Image (cartoon, rainbow, N blue to C red; front, side, top):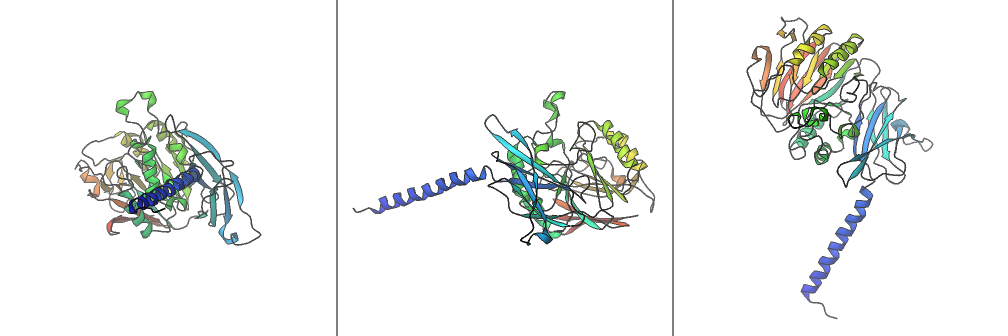
Length: 411
């Protein structure tokens, strides 16, 4: 039987479409239970434990994680340790339910490289690696990012990749809120994880919520003003914060630094009392605080001053070294401050930084110019912060890896 050229073309096209869509359906079934959005988070004691969270679109048979020291990984006699996962079902809409799984690896050894993977009986992720922190004061570097929020995958991917190229051995990445524009929109979280790629599988992320991880308080009843239902399922963060604020307010210690993550969206007075208790017991050499909304706002759009009333006296009393912020979609760094004033040269004070990692920018006010060492706008940035025994080295970079700002704090 003769087949015309047109019929041959149609036959070939039909076969190609069958193979493409048939394969897609098969892959789709596999992807439903294959781990995605894998992310490491530090625990309160990152020298002996590590948290990992992941998601599947379908519930597997036995969600779990495996871990082994890298030095033992090639040994035929060694077997990974198994940790069963905690699983929560999250309804994205009336038709779609996804499953988030979390594990905290405990009883780890300080300053050791580990390999791990997550999954279930039939579908495991690739093996990834992380290194635990040292139990003692030891030099390290971490990266700090301001707001991302918009054009997450298309634009902010460049910032993340440039940051990784510049500082591939960072201990962790700290995000000061507004990772997305709408915290309840799962498509935006998908963009965030796509933009990050495999980075959070090997470098832990420490995140705090911005106002965009909450609903817009102008349009909802007060009782509905709660953090996005997607926040806690996506991340496994320390739960040592005040009641009702767990995993949005917390502290952790890392190689001589006490880090405190605050939530500028609710219960400020309650956090101030908790902060005082945390810092009164602190025995670490350095103290770094992060909060999304600024203490000294440089935006023309707003000027919130309640943090100056509730937080600044605590910062001053316990000699907080550095406060990392976002929200204003611009850049600023203060001189060392105490009691809302610039301190004389060589005296102890707190430096307050605001930064921006995304492509959305606001005009700058001159309101606090007398407190500012540097201000700027309209440029995505990331910050590398190296902490040594007696010096904190801070460097802000633009997307071309050029130094935008730098300073040091000496003990």
